[in-house]
Length: 406
Image (cartoon, rainbow, N blue to C red):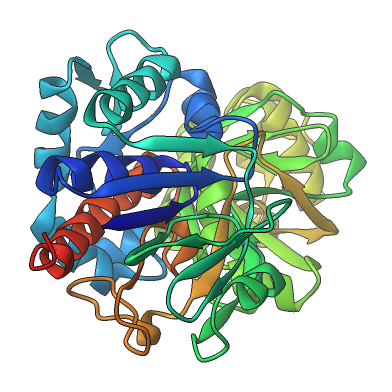
């Protein structure tokens, strides 16, 4: 009895080890097109591996998972974030939770996670074949391997090759499997504004970004770069608006609320500045969280003289300052990849699977897990949590399906 796992990423390796634990008599072979397993895990979190999140700041799963929240909710019934935390600690990886909810190994070393999974696969008897690309899944679960004349036959298949583009998925899978078009997610935005780009390195602790005209927004830390904007707020917006940005060829307008707050509170602040700080120059009194350089940039965007005193400005000038603080518009000229921590929006349609087992509705015995599904999340450990939980859920389904054969 053979199980073939296609893709040696987080979901595939996690699932492979769990299948062997549940079904020791099954042969489990993992095929990886690249030269080594878990390559993406090794670089995630800046090489520290943000492997899950406490979810304490998440009121609805849709906030963390713009696509696939309902399936993720089912997967959490199989393996919750709390159970994931315990799973890794039981495996010998001590974890630490940051104030923002991100969970890292205490070692701050992603390779500890990689080595642990590799060890668990090796000890359990999982066969890992790197540098072997599966080109097609044929009826009867015959896998065509590039460079091999003989197909590999399996009794069940798990597809966990995250990041595959739509064309590659259509070539690999039976034609009846529904595919949602794939586009990038989690990227930074190019903003061709020389004055803004000159502020590279500036960090805004709480900004709100909106893709103008779409109603899609995100809030968090904003980092200004020499090409545009980055940081958690930008990455979150790119996730929420992945499809809208792709449809517009990554062109549009970015609206920045530099304070992350609503208009009335900003209006109150400018009124108080005029009445209580009237003798000070505009440049000498700024909102908390904004650097002197950024504040002068914002005053320039408002078209006011920074040397004027607060008591001297009138209603119209205050309105321009408020507008520059809360609705500062910049052109978007494209996207830039966020190091190696990118994900794909789209993949195997969730309508094509049983959401309680992750098995194909049309091809019993074909399972899916991880990013190959139309599931993706914002940054912060949420994507890896989805990989662990869906991998675990698929392992349960595969073990149950094949247990009668043993």
